[in-house]
Image (cartoon, rainbow, N blue to C red; front, side, top):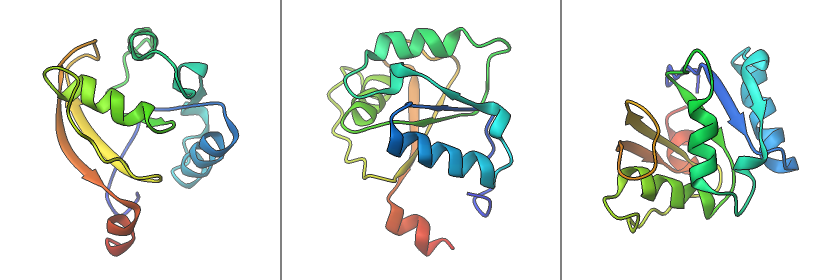
Length: 126
């Protein structure tokens, strides 16, 4: 992630073991431990509406957020935010990375999908 020059104001993660461990590793590598927040709204089968509401409650509003969660919930969230009807087919691989751009997270189409990378593609980037 350092070579990709990604920066985050907030790392928002599921509290479940594998996601939490991944988020902690990323936070440590980027020296962002204080910006790591755990929330059950990223646990499997959590509501996308509640997740969006919780993201909008952060003050000041973070501009760059890394979500660390589970499948198929993250694919569904990407679909809801970037697809006009929430039926956008997203093949989000375990350990993958996705960039969405949006003004404010809200339910329904509000984001543009900028890129979607698999772990294999990230490894090739060095």
